[in-house]
Amino acid sequence: MHTKTANSLILTDRIIHYKMKDEFIRILLILIIVTTPFSLLAGSIDSGVTAFQLANAMGIDSSIILLAELKVIGKDTSADHDGYGIWSDNILGFPYQSSNFAVLTCGNIGLIPGSNTLTGASYDQGIQDNKGMDGGGDDGVQLHIKLKVPDGMYTASYIFCFLSEEYPEYVGSTFNDFYFFEVGQTAITYQASKPSSSYNIVYDNTGKIISVNSDFFLRTDEPTGTQFDGRTQILANCFPVIPGDIIDIYFSVGDMGDAILMSGVFIDDFRFYETKISKPHTVDLVTKTLLGLESATVSVINYPNPFIYSGSNGVTINLNEDICQRIPGKGISRIDIFDARGRKVITLNINDKTSIVWDGKDSDGQVIASGVYYYLVYTVDGRKGKGKLTFIK
Image (cartoon, rainbow, N blue to C red; front, side, top):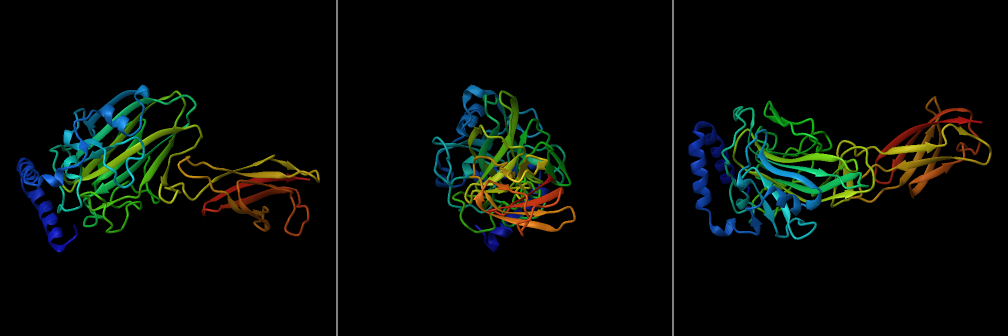
Protein backbone atom coordinates (compact mmCIF):
# COMPACT_ATOMS: atom_id res chain seq x y z
CA MET A 1 0.00 0.00 0.00
CA HIS A 2 1.92 3.05 -1.27
CA THR A 3 0.17 6.33 -0.43
CA LYS A 4 1.29 9.59 1.08
CA THR A 5 -0.66 8.71 4.20
CA ALA A 6 0.98 5.30 4.36
CA ASN A 7 4.44 6.85 4.06
CA SER A 8 3.64 9.30 6.87
CA LEU A 9 2.44 6.51 9.13
CA ILE A 10 5.60 4.47 8.51
CA LEU A 11 7.86 7.47 9.12
CA THR A 12 5.98 8.16 12.36
CA ASP A 13 6.57 4.54 13.39
CA ARG A 14 10.31 5.08 12.86
CA ILE A 15 10.38 8.22 15.02
CA ILE A 16 8.35 6.61 17.80
CA HIS A 17 10.61 3.60 17.74
CA TYR A 18 13.64 5.70 18.61
CA LYS A 19 11.98 7.95 21.16
CA MET A 20 9.94 5.47 23.22
CA LYS A 21 10.98 2.57 25.37
CA ASP A 22 11.16 -0.88 23.77
CA GLU A 23 8.63 -2.39 26.17
CA PHE A 24 6.00 0.21 25.27
CA ILE A 25 6.59 -0.42 21.55
CA ARG A 26 6.08 -4.13 21.98
CA ILE A 27 2.80 -3.52 23.79
CA LEU A 28 1.68 -1.09 21.07
CA LEU A 29 2.46 -3.51 18.26
CA ILE A 30 0.73 -6.36 20.05
CA LEU A 31 -2.39 -4.20 20.34
CA ILE A 32 -2.24 -3.51 16.60
CA ILE A 33 -2.06 -7.21 15.84
CA VAL A 34 -4.85 -8.10 18.26
CA THR A 35 -7.15 -5.51 16.68
CA THR A 36 -6.33 -6.57 13.12
CA PRO A 37 -9.32 -8.30 11.47
CA PHE A 38 -9.05 -12.06 11.63
CA SER A 39 -9.38 -12.37 7.86
CA LEU A 40 -6.00 -10.67 7.46
CA LEU A 41 -4.34 -13.19 9.75
CA ALA A 42 -5.94 -16.21 8.17
CA GLY A 43 -4.02 -18.47 5.85
CA SER A 44 -2.69 -21.99 5.54
CA ILE A 45 0.35 -21.34 7.72
CA ASP A 46 1.35 -23.70 10.52
CA SER A 47 3.49 -21.85 13.07
CA GLY A 48 3.61 -24.70 15.58
CA VAL A 49 6.44 -26.52 13.85
CA THR A 50 9.95 -27.71 14.66
CA ALA A 51 13.22 -27.03 12.87
CA PHE A 52 13.18 -30.63 11.55
CA GLN A 53 9.73 -30.06 10.06
CA LEU A 54 10.93 -26.85 8.39
CA ALA A 55 13.83 -28.77 6.86
CA ASN A 56 11.43 -31.44 5.60
CA ALA A 57 9.09 -28.77 4.18
CA MET A 58 11.92 -27.37 2.05
CA GLY A 59 12.66 -30.87 0.72
CA ILE A 60 15.53 -32.17 2.89
CA ASP A 61 15.08 -35.86 3.65
CA SER A 62 15.03 -36.76 7.35
CA SER A 63 17.54 -39.57 6.83
CA ILE A 64 20.40 -37.13 6.14
CA ILE A 65 19.57 -34.54 8.84
CA LEU A 66 21.88 -34.80 11.84
CA LEU A 67 20.73 -31.62 13.59
CA ALA A 68 18.10 -28.92 13.04
CA GLU A 69 17.57 -25.94 15.32
CA LEU A 70 16.04 -22.47 15.32
CA LYS A 71 18.03 -19.75 17.05
CA VAL A 72 18.27 -16.00 17.32
CA ILE A 73 21.07 -14.73 15.07
CA GLY A 74 24.28 -14.57 17.10
CA LYS A 75 22.66 -15.91 20.27
CA ASP A 76 22.28 -19.29 21.91
CA THR A 77 18.58 -18.69 22.51
CA SER A 78 15.56 -20.08 20.71
CA ALA A 79 14.01 -18.07 17.89
CA ASP A 80 10.64 -16.40 18.41
CA HIS A 81 7.79 -18.78 17.48
CA ASP A 82 6.20 -15.98 15.45
CA GLY A 83 9.25 -15.94 13.19
CA TYR A 84 8.85 -19.22 11.30
CA GLY A 85 6.35 -21.68 9.94
CA ILE A 86 5.21 -23.90 7.08
CA TRP A 87 2.90 -22.57 4.35
CA SER A 88 0.71 -24.81 2.22
CA ASP A 89 -0.95 -22.20 -0.04
CA ASN A 90 0.04 -21.84 -3.71
CA ILE A 91 1.77 -18.48 -4.08
CA LEU A 92 4.46 -17.10 -6.43
CA GLY A 93 4.99 -20.63 -7.75
CA PHE A 94 5.58 -22.03 -4.27
CA PRO A 95 5.51 -24.82 -3.25
CA TYR A 96 7.92 -26.21 -5.83
CA GLN A 97 7.92 -29.72 -4.40
CA SER A 98 5.52 -31.63 -2.17
CA SER A 99 2.59 -29.59 -0.80
CA ASN A 100 4.24 -26.94 1.39
CA PHE A 101 7.35 -24.82 1.95
CA ALA A 102 9.30 -23.15 4.76
CA VAL A 103 8.97 -19.49 5.75
CA LEU A 104 11.24 -17.39 7.99
CA THR A 105 10.42 -13.82 9.01
CA CYS A 106 11.78 -11.11 11.29
CA GLY A 107 8.15 -10.18 12.01
CA ASN A 108 5.05 -12.26 12.66
CA ILE A 109 4.32 -15.07 10.23
CA GLY A 110 0.59 -14.67 10.86
CA LEU A 111 0.69 -11.22 9.24
CA ILE A 112 2.08 -12.43 5.90
CA PRO A 113 -1.08 -13.79 4.17
CA GLY A 114 -3.40 -11.28 2.53
CA SER A 115 -3.67 -8.89 -0.41
CA ASN A 116 -1.40 -6.09 0.83
CA THR A 117 -4.17 -4.43 2.81
CA LEU A 118 -2.01 -3.57 5.82
CA THR A 119 -0.17 -0.25 6.01
CA GLY A 120 3.39 -0.84 7.18
CA ALA A 121 3.00 -4.44 8.38
CA SER A 122 5.15 -4.58 11.52
CA TYR A 123 5.90 -6.79 14.48
CA ASP A 124 8.62 -6.54 17.12
CA GLN A 125 9.81 -9.92 18.35
CA GLY A 126 11.57 -8.09 21.18
CA ILE A 127 15.02 -9.45 20.32
CA GLN A 128 18.07 -7.17 19.97
CA ASP A 129 21.73 -7.87 19.35
CA ASN A 130 22.70 -5.64 22.29
CA LYS A 131 24.70 -3.31 20.03
CA GLY A 132 22.10 -0.60 19.79
CA MET A 133 19.51 0.06 17.14
CA ASP A 134 21.76 2.47 15.21
CA GLY A 135 24.48 -0.10 14.55
CA GLY A 136 22.95 -3.52 14.86
CA GLY A 137 20.13 -5.84 14.04
CA ASP A 138 16.92 -6.93 15.68
CA ASP A 139 14.57 -9.89 15.46
CA GLY A 140 17.05 -12.18 13.72
CA VAL A 141 15.71 -15.70 13.02
CA GLN A 142 18.17 -18.39 11.96
CA LEU A 143 17.52 -21.99 10.85
CA HIS A 144 20.62 -24.17 11.30
CA ILE A 145 20.73 -27.60 9.66
CA LYS A 146 23.57 -30.10 9.92
CA LEU A 147 23.32 -32.78 7.25
CA LYS A 148 25.26 -35.51 5.50
CA VAL A 149 25.69 -35.09 1.75
CA PRO A 150 24.39 -38.19 -0.08
CA ASP A 151 26.95 -40.36 -1.85
CA GLY A 152 27.65 -39.38 -5.45
CA MET A 153 26.30 -35.85 -5.04
CA TYR A 154 28.49 -32.83 -5.82
CA THR A 155 26.05 -29.90 -5.92
CA ALA A 156 23.28 -28.71 -3.60
CA SER A 157 20.58 -26.21 -4.52
CA TYR A 158 17.38 -24.68 -3.17
CA ILE A 159 14.79 -22.10 -4.27
CA PHE A 160 14.06 -18.89 -2.39
CA CYS A 161 12.25 -15.56 -2.61
CA PHE A 162 12.96 -12.63 -0.27
CA LEU A 163 10.03 -10.28 0.45
CA SER A 164 9.91 -7.02 2.39
CA GLU A 165 7.57 -4.31 3.64
CA GLU A 166 10.45 -1.80 3.42
CA TYR A 167 10.05 -1.44 -0.36
CA PRO A 168 10.03 1.17 -1.81
CA GLU A 169 10.09 3.77 0.97
CA TYR A 170 13.36 2.72 2.59
CA VAL A 171 15.46 1.54 -0.33
CA GLY A 172 19.00 2.80 0.28
CA SER A 173 18.43 3.63 3.95
CA THR A 174 19.92 2.03 7.06
CA PHE A 175 16.65 0.21 7.69
CA ASN A 176 17.29 -2.64 5.27
CA ASP A 177 16.33 -6.11 6.43
CA PHE A 178 18.43 -8.93 5.00
CA TYR A 179 18.57 -12.59 4.03
CA PHE A 180 21.79 -14.63 4.35
CA PHE A 181 22.61 -18.22 3.47
CA GLU A 182 25.84 -19.37 5.12
CA VAL A 183 27.73 -22.61 4.54
CA GLY A 184 30.19 -24.08 7.06
CA GLN A 185 29.71 -21.62 9.89
CA THR A 186 27.67 -18.61 10.88
CA ALA A 187 29.41 -15.33 11.66
CA ILE A 188 26.94 -12.50 11.07
CA THR A 189 28.17 -9.13 12.31
CA TYR A 190 26.87 -5.57 12.01
CA GLN A 191 29.22 -2.82 10.90
CA ALA A 192 28.03 0.72 10.13
CA SER A 193 24.42 -0.48 9.99
CA LYS A 194 25.32 -3.19 7.47
CA PRO A 195 25.21 -6.92 8.18
CA SER A 196 27.98 -9.12 6.79
CA SER A 197 29.38 -12.64 7.00
CA SER A 198 32.34 -14.24 5.26
CA TYR A 199 30.31 -17.46 5.07
CA ASN A 200 27.33 -15.93 3.24
CA ILE A 201 27.22 -17.14 -0.38
CA VAL A 202 24.21 -15.21 -1.77
CA TYR A 203 25.04 -11.90 -3.47
CA ASP A 204 23.67 -10.01 -6.46
CA ASN A 205 25.50 -9.01 -9.65
CA THR A 206 27.38 -6.17 -7.95
CA GLY A 207 28.21 -7.90 -4.67
CA LYS A 208 25.31 -6.54 -2.61
CA ILE A 209 23.58 -8.76 -0.07
CA ILE A 210 19.95 -9.80 -0.47
CA SER A 211 17.80 -6.88 0.72
CA VAL A 212 15.56 -4.23 -0.88
CA ASN A 213 18.81 -2.74 -2.26
CA SER A 214 19.70 -5.92 -4.15
CA ASP A 215 19.75 -5.98 -7.95
CA PHE A 216 17.53 -9.04 -7.66
CA PHE A 217 14.76 -7.06 -5.96
CA LEU A 218 11.98 -6.34 -8.47
CA ARG A 219 11.40 -2.60 -9.04
CA THR A 220 7.67 -2.83 -9.61
CA ASP A 221 4.32 -2.27 -7.95
CA GLU A 222 3.21 -5.76 -9.01
CA PRO A 223 1.34 -7.41 -6.10
CA THR A 224 3.30 -10.04 -4.19
CA GLY A 225 0.21 -11.99 -3.16
CA THR A 226 1.09 -11.21 0.47
CA GLN A 227 1.11 -8.23 2.82
CA PHE A 228 4.69 -7.48 1.69
CA ASP A 229 5.13 -4.52 -0.66
CA GLY A 230 7.93 -6.01 -2.78
CA ARG A 231 10.03 -9.09 -3.48
CA THR A 232 13.02 -10.49 -5.35
CA GLN A 233 12.89 -12.67 -8.40
CA ILE A 234 12.29 -16.37 -7.80
CA LEU A 235 15.87 -17.52 -7.32
CA ALA A 236 17.84 -20.71 -6.89
CA ASN A 237 21.07 -20.77 -4.94
CA CYS A 238 23.53 -23.49 -6.05
CA PHE A 239 26.75 -24.44 -4.24
CA PRO A 240 29.38 -27.20 -4.41
CA VAL A 241 29.44 -30.04 -1.86
CA ILE A 242 31.53 -33.19 -1.30
CA PRO A 243 29.84 -36.61 -1.35
CA GLY A 244 29.55 -38.09 2.14
CA ASP A 245 30.66 -34.83 3.79
CA ILE A 246 28.90 -33.42 6.85
CA ILE A 247 28.00 -29.76 6.34
CA ASP A 248 26.33 -26.99 8.33
CA ILE A 249 23.99 -24.61 6.54
CA TYR A 250 22.33 -21.49 7.99
CA PHE A 251 19.26 -19.67 6.67
CA SER A 252 18.92 -16.23 8.34
CA VAL A 253 16.56 -13.28 8.06
CA GLY A 254 16.69 -10.19 10.26
CA ASP A 255 15.70 -6.59 10.81
CA MET A 256 18.43 -4.00 10.34
CA GLY A 257 18.63 -0.91 12.53
CA ASP A 258 15.14 -1.30 13.94
CA ALA A 259 12.49 -3.88 14.81
CA ILE A 260 9.59 -2.88 12.57
CA LEU A 261 8.51 -3.14 8.90
CA MET A 262 8.97 -6.90 8.65
CA SER A 263 10.58 -8.98 5.91
CA GLY A 264 10.60 -12.68 5.17
CA VAL A 265 11.95 -15.45 2.96
CA PHE A 266 10.24 -18.40 1.25
CA ILE A 267 12.47 -21.51 0.99
CA ASP A 268 11.74 -24.72 -0.92
CA ASP A 269 12.96 -27.55 -3.17
CA PHE A 270 16.33 -28.29 -1.56
CA ARG A 271 17.97 -30.99 -3.66
CA PHE A 272 21.29 -32.53 -4.71
CA TYR A 273 22.84 -33.13 -8.14
CA GLU A 274 25.55 -35.44 -9.46
CA THR A 275 27.07 -32.73 -11.67
CA LYS A 276 29.95 -30.67 -10.32
CA ILE A 277 30.29 -26.90 -10.00
CA SER A 278 33.37 -25.08 -8.75
CA LYS A 279 31.76 -22.12 -6.97
CA PRO A 280 28.36 -20.94 -5.69
CA HIS A 281 26.05 -19.10 -8.02
CA THR A 282 22.46 -17.91 -8.32
CA VAL A 283 19.92 -18.79 -10.99
CA ASP A 284 16.86 -16.84 -12.14
CA LEU A 285 14.25 -19.60 -12.35
CA VAL A 286 11.90 -17.57 -14.56
CA THR A 287 14.37 -16.72 -17.33
CA LYS A 288 16.60 -19.76 -16.69
CA THR A 289 19.73 -17.63 -16.66
CA LEU A 290 22.81 -17.51 -14.48
CA LEU A 291 23.10 -14.55 -12.08
CA GLY A 292 25.59 -13.26 -9.55
CA LEU A 293 29.21 -12.18 -9.55
CA GLU A 294 30.39 -15.06 -11.74
CA SER A 295 27.59 -14.87 -14.29
CA ALA A 296 29.67 -13.20 -17.01
CA THR A 297 32.35 -15.89 -17.31
CA VAL A 298 32.57 -19.49 -18.46
CA SER A 299 35.28 -22.10 -18.13
CA VAL A 300 36.94 -23.32 -21.34
CA ILE A 301 39.50 -26.11 -21.87
CA ASN A 302 41.50 -27.17 -24.92
CA TYR A 303 43.35 -30.40 -25.70
CA PRO A 304 45.86 -31.55 -26.61
CA ASN A 305 48.05 -28.76 -25.29
CA PRO A 306 50.60 -28.29 -26.75
CA PHE A 307 48.98 -28.94 -30.12
CA ILE A 308 51.54 -30.64 -32.35
CA TYR A 309 50.41 -30.20 -35.92
CA SER A 310 50.59 -33.24 -38.23
CA GLY A 311 48.53 -32.06 -41.18
CA SER A 312 45.47 -34.12 -40.36
CA ASN A 313 44.81 -33.52 -36.69
CA GLY A 314 43.24 -30.63 -34.70
CA VAL A 315 42.86 -29.10 -31.27
CA THR A 316 39.53 -29.39 -29.44
CA ILE A 317 38.25 -26.25 -27.71
CA ASN A 318 35.55 -27.30 -25.27
CA LEU A 319 33.07 -25.25 -23.24
CA ASN A 320 33.31 -26.60 -19.70
CA GLU A 321 29.91 -25.50 -18.30
CA ASP A 322 30.20 -24.66 -14.63
CA ILE A 323 26.51 -24.22 -13.88
CA CYS A 324 23.90 -25.90 -11.74
CA GLN A 325 21.39 -28.21 -13.42
CA ARG A 326 18.66 -25.72 -12.49
CA ILE A 327 19.21 -24.16 -15.93
CA PRO A 328 19.94 -25.76 -19.30
CA GLY A 329 23.47 -25.52 -20.66
CA LYS A 330 24.18 -22.86 -23.29
CA GLY A 331 26.44 -23.43 -26.25
CA ILE A 332 29.14 -21.38 -28.00
CA SER A 333 28.31 -18.55 -30.41
CA ARG A 334 31.84 -17.88 -31.69
CA ILE A 335 35.55 -18.17 -30.85
CA ASP A 336 38.12 -15.46 -31.69
CA ILE A 337 41.74 -16.68 -31.83
CA PHE A 338 44.69 -14.25 -31.50
CA ASP A 339 48.46 -14.56 -31.79
CA ALA A 340 50.90 -13.42 -29.11
CA ARG A 341 50.87 -9.86 -30.52
CA GLY A 342 47.09 -9.59 -30.18
CA ARG A 343 46.37 -9.91 -33.91
CA LYS A 344 43.23 -11.88 -34.74
CA VAL A 345 44.05 -15.10 -36.58
CA ILE A 346 40.54 -16.40 -37.19
CA THR A 347 36.93 -16.25 -35.99
CA LEU A 348 35.22 -19.62 -35.62
CA ASN A 349 31.45 -19.24 -35.85
CA ILE A 350 29.55 -22.00 -34.06
CA ASN A 351 25.84 -22.72 -33.89
CA ASP A 352 25.15 -23.43 -30.21
CA LYS A 353 27.58 -26.31 -29.82
CA THR A 354 29.67 -26.96 -26.73
CA SER A 355 32.94 -27.75 -28.55
CA ILE A 356 34.79 -27.39 -31.84
CA VAL A 357 37.89 -28.91 -33.44
CA TRP A 358 40.22 -26.28 -34.95
CA ASP A 359 42.66 -27.39 -37.66
CA GLY A 360 45.33 -24.78 -36.88
CA LYS A 361 44.66 -22.66 -39.96
CA ASP A 362 44.01 -18.91 -40.15
CA SER A 363 41.18 -17.10 -41.94
CA ASP A 364 43.06 -17.45 -45.28
CA GLY A 365 43.35 -21.21 -44.90
CA GLN A 366 47.09 -21.11 -44.13
CA VAL A 367 48.68 -23.13 -41.31
CA ILE A 368 49.69 -20.74 -38.51
CA ALA A 369 53.25 -20.35 -37.22
CA SER A 370 54.48 -22.11 -34.10
CA GLY A 371 53.86 -20.15 -30.92
CA VAL A 372 51.42 -19.33 -28.12
CA TYR A 373 47.87 -18.38 -29.11
CA TYR A 374 45.01 -16.93 -27.09
CA TYR A 375 41.28 -17.23 -27.64
CA LEU A 376 38.01 -15.69 -26.45
CA VAL A 377 34.82 -17.75 -26.34
CA TYR A 378 31.38 -16.12 -26.55
CA THR A 379 28.31 -18.12 -25.52
CA VAL A 380 24.82 -17.73 -26.96
CA ASP A 381 23.58 -16.32 -23.63
CA GLY A 382 26.18 -13.52 -23.56
CA ARG A 383 28.86 -14.96 -21.27
CA LYS A 384 32.56 -15.04 -22.08
CA GLY A 385 35.48 -17.38 -21.50
CA LYS A 386 39.15 -17.37 -22.42
CA GLY A 387 42.13 -19.66 -22.78
CA LYS A 388 45.48 -20.20 -24.48
CA LEU A 389 47.27 -22.97 -26.35
CA THR A 390 50.72 -23.72 -27.67
CA PHE A 391 50.94 -24.60 -31.37
CA ILE A 392 53.91 -26.56 -32.75
CA LYS A 393 54.46 -27.54 -36.37
